[in-house]
Length: 395
Ligand SMILES: Cc1ncc(COP(=O)(O)O)c(C=O)c1O
Image 1 (cartoon, helix red, strand yellow):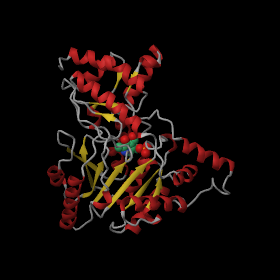
Image 2: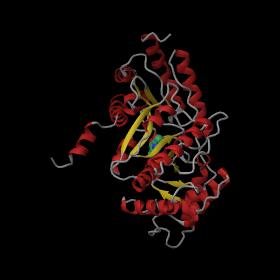
Image 3: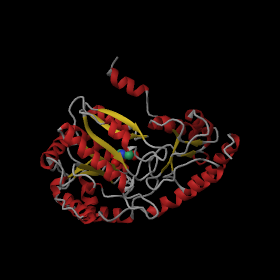
Image 4: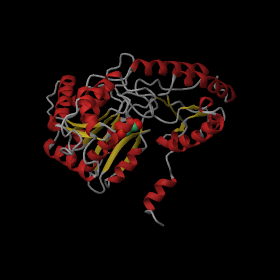
């Protein structure tokens, strides 16, 4: 066999999201793209904000000498300074550019963070359902992902997390707003989680990090205010991306912010800078760093996502679907009327509706719907969802 057994196995179990995406592509070629309602991928159709193109034009018209050269592996000082000042403004803590490492999206950020903290055999705990790539990211760096079921409303089961921590635990990773559920964790349970991590770190004599995947940080709805993770626990690492808030996932830009109170923060920053280099990212894309440093207060129009959430959520609930109302990100994670989520995904597919089965996120019996699509796609799909609700006796 030409490739490693490990990768062979990973490919065999190819992600459900990818699988549905590929099947959807086939259906689109057969029936025409306008006849297929594709909610399988979190690839936003929203265009980047006008300010993004304005800044792009400014740079193109006034190129900075050396702007395409290599740079320090943690990124441009100017960009890191403007992000540090944004975080200081948002949190009240004093961040400096030393605590910011520019990364190739949240995916790159999570990988440099994990590479920096994990030794072989270390464990990282996360709440299930969870973003499927975590398992591969842990494995990249010799760690193991340990999952703990969330509660029925997808909030953190703190007792279960506490019970899962042992002497091998190096970090707990939380993702809020969450993919696939859209839930946003409240401040009070996060404070309790911080206390648990503090106690367990003391018990086992080593720092357990709180790794916060904040890829959807700015996509929150109604009057929800995302709790500031730096205020709940000292040893906190936040991973932030512009894939969704500026709608530029193909440009691969984000950053890691290390809490000013984290244990060994200087060494941690050095380690992540080294990891950026040696994992082969070398540095985050230069042009994008210049742009996002100037766009720290800009994001896509969140109200458009909220309108889509309302349209979809209200429509499905009216038909009888059982859903925890998402307060952020752009996913719905309804319960299926039958235990077999793959069978339900297939039933939806027969109505030209593409979704991903919950088992792909560690939680069978649900489906994930990514609604970062055009409004008309949601509207046109509702009839299919209604017909299935009747067929399966949801009302
Ligand atoms: C929860 C979560 N984390 C990380 C990522 C990776 O995002 P990026 O494009 O910034 O690498 C995604 C992408 O969808 C995600 O959903």
